[in-house]
Amino acid sequence: MNHARNRVSTRMRAGASRARAFTLIEVLATLVLIGIVLPVAMKGATLAMQAASGARHQAEAATMGEAKLNQMIAEGDYAISGGSGTFAPDFPQYRWTVTSALRDFNVT
Image: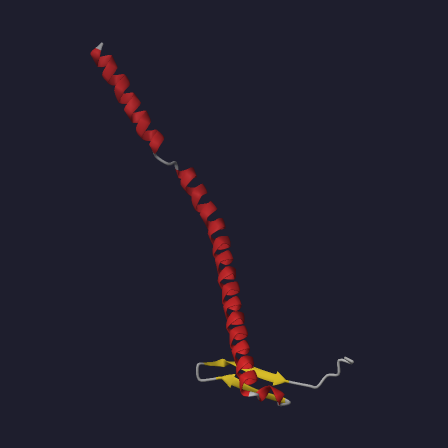
């Protein structure tokens, strides 16, 4: 009787160890799924980083443009008809251009 219990116990342990392992089909299916999902996820991350970079450049340009406009108003240079320049040496990749014109608003 004790011998029969050992056989059942051994079979249960052998079956339990097989249940914990992955089959070749499961591993291959997982690799195929990763091969499909990973490039899509990486493309999404790349697009998000490009959008963030563009937004950062736009925010920098707007901040520098506002600072230049405030400087021109404070110094009284806003009355000139036009001008242009760069933000060198700190930001030589950004350029600015100002144009002013007289307007008649017909206010009486």
